Length: 306
Length: 305
Image 1 (cartoon, each protein chain N blue to C red):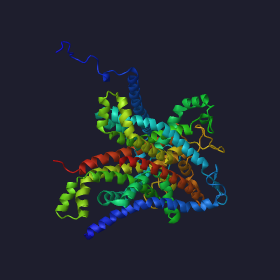
Image 2 (cartoon, each protein chain N blue to C red):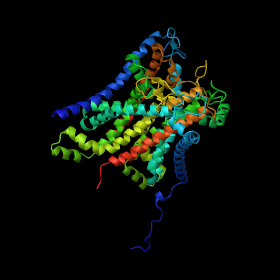
Image 3 (cartoon, rainbow over the protein chains, first blue to last red):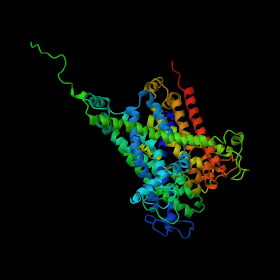
Image 4 (cartoon, rainbow over the protein chains, first blue to last red):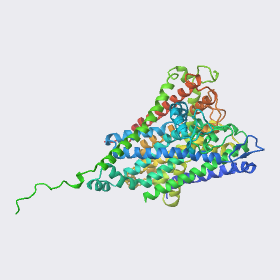
């Protein structure tokens, strides 16, 4: 091999190795920085609700509340975004006029280009006041149902998981849509033509060919959306109200903090290494969580390709 | 020969009779599918309307573009966001200078050299990296740069965190563009005795360049909207700071967050105007970068006969 070739090949391979190593390094460095804080923790990291890290000599923090709020907001977002994305992906691949499918798709992609702090500010300053009568009504009418019971940030019902979940759903729409769309587009034409020849209506064609073919891809895309929702930071930090003294109690009208929004809201505590370590430990849990979700999503999508 | 030959089938074929229930289901599905598209358009239009309608109040004035907020009280009318624009552009530029070569090398590796386990692992890790939350990237740089190396919080630390977020996007888009370069071009070059690395540099890359640049600009526009790394890795300053390696430095998302925390958010107040003015400025910058990407991509595209 010529020397120029050898140098170039090593250079590109090195870049590949660097990316592979990067994921390991992220986990490693977060772990190293988290250990001193975890050792100084007087509470149980996995089962404590409270989070007090102001005094490095007397820290007691646990991730249970963060985990619950993170899961709750992400699930609300996913439950709203999944059917809507499915509809949009079907619209773009099966219903939209051929000439308009591309520009329409571009419109949905634009949602992904809006910076998340703008979504957050819009969510709390514009969207939340606009839907306040609606959320107040739901809260009043269905308060007997535990998930919709009066939460810990009443009475104005704005900075809740309910509001945050809806805004988050809008934010993860484009990623679920674009991947599902890609899969649906690859439905074999003979399958669809066969269904049409048998006299199927448009919806029956979709139900019998497009959906079975694209199911795995759609599930994988939704999991990627879930991964995005778990890690969303600033929009949730702006929207979610953190109540004083009361824990999250599985009502959508509760406030609270997710892993990411908690870290973003308390960056001012990063002035000493031990307190910062507590947040890094929370970040490590978030990293592992998103890693697992993305890992699962990629395996589901990858299986289909082979 | 019978005289009763039919000129058409006695009964219409089954597939022409669509039962009412099937018709209703089909109609319902069509309605729901159209509706879901509208559901996605509503928030987009609503957000953009909010940004433009509220942001337009301050940005037509020249001092919005030419001054910083250093000499203004937090609730005093006046000043501009020059300091934040400079910070955003500097941090984005430095991030691109680091992320683009790495991302392109990885893409070249995957397309031209990558076989076997390492290539599979690389593809997989690029996917995982693209799912790493921005706050985790920020914490990693904090743990590495600030705690381990003992270096100060700075705009450069922000750039490093943005590098992590930009690399996967650059790899993905460059990879896609390199793969559609026809193999005939590579083979023709090898046949003339051109070494592989020179073929890649002089034939493959220039052919794919227009698409690659488009992808890079999109990635840049995306990381410039990130807020989380700014919170953890650099302090906000109302004064213009050209030094990316030291001191506090503003950026547009950080300015918005700072106004949100320190100022009243009542409509018409100073903080409200500044936030939406900065939001519109950020959206405009992102739009301009995307536009430049399109124009530039056309300019460097290989000439067609």
